[in-house]
Image (cartoon, rainbow, N blue to C red; front, side, top):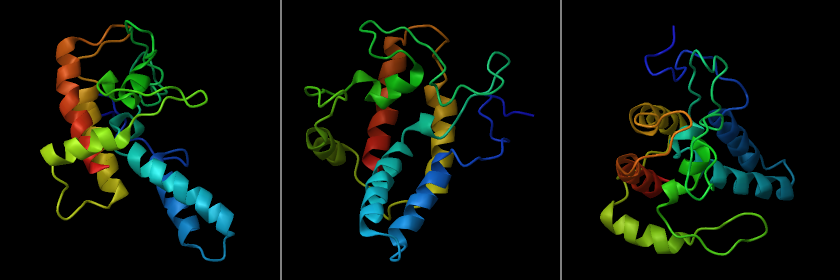
Length: 179
């Protein structure tokens, strides 16, 4: 049976999940027999994946009667957004709920000014001591946050409420500080 929120805690992990990707990137980075270029590419990927592991929707797929194969971490959960930037729940959370400023486009992707966000954030939310360095712990925390904060209070094809976005700010800030 599925867990009460339908987040598939009982599902078998496949090779297309973040834990496998972090493990594989770490393996290549640590393999001195691999070509330096490949190791450098995988180091860049590893840095990206560690950040992604702290966004709760990268750690789950919600299963329901309407989506028996899962919602692919909110990618298949359409929401309505006033500026149409966020076509689905995953994009909303990848964009930090729209809470932080963006800069001009670089190619086809928007970039956030991370030092302007992270420096004041780390004053408000100090780094964990000692830091948690276990990807399985990150994934489990992400699953719990997805269940308790991300999916709670948002409906299929609905607009996120102000209360939802305000509650989500705490999750976004906490996870940014951890990442």
